[in-house]
Length: 318
Image (cartoon, rainbow, N blue to C red):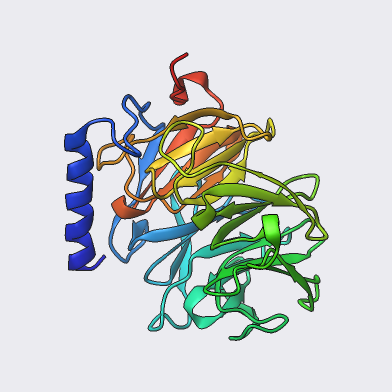
């Protein structure tokens, strides 16, 4: 983290704390079950982590702004690491893992997706700079369904999702800025649920959208705001075993849980540095026993909470 950003972050968090119940500062957040990570470039150290994914074996992958990808256990034990091939132009913001364990990294500022084996060996490149079929401007995330079809989201003018075959051949795009009610503005994260519905964190529209496998718009929920049930720059999402969604809100410094109709089931988190507080979280991943692993980006750590325990979530007073 550079000095200018660090100073700005400290000032912002201090102002929020002094003001009391301001946007993203829900009081009384339950303490995390587990917390791990620290600032640095070594094992279990992070330099502003921005994406996370869990493979079918339960291994957690995290990438940070240094282009450092780490594989960890869900209890915070280091397994292995590697680095993106280039980072001078910018850093990756998304990770996706195929059913066979192949790791896809949205190499945002290089307009491509880097592909790796589960142990970090290069396995291919998807995409190139441009606005045409199969090209990207600023790819943000990757999701792979159980049949191997690949979805890539992007922003920076294209603001769309492109679908590729299991052989990495371009098929079609959808959700661009001229798509009417399906128009996206910085789709930051993708999630494919068991019935092959694609959920999208449509971050600059402050909503969650969903599409079928053919790119047809199925609906959306959310509106801009800071109250329970509202969203402020949703940057990531995942699914609990009961079918409810958990959404990471970068702008509100919290995680919010929703049913599939968009009804809020509560929030967790507040702006700050202490356990139970968050600093601009970019990502989360649901792990074993519905535990939610939250990438607490500005604090260079991971906080783990119980996904469905009633005492976890702060709900609006009735």
